[in-house]
Image (cartoon, rainbow, N blue to C red; front, side):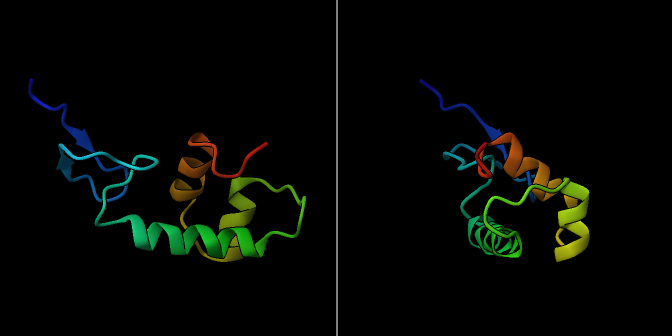
Amino acid sequence: MASKLKQCEICGCITSSSLRDGVCSECIEKDDELYTQAKNCMKFGEKMLPEELSHKTGIDTKHILRWVKHGRFGN
């Protein structure tokens, strides 16, 4: 049985290996660094719009929206 091809949501590469939160193994480390930076910028329990977090951290909104989509920020 052939494996299903998937596309990395960051770099766009096509891979047959598994993706974590839509990200290929080549992009995972940088994505984790950006995510940690975003989480550290927010105070415990603080809520803000993705655009606000992007402005505060300099992280592209597309990354923040992807983390929200994949449940990385929780509820």
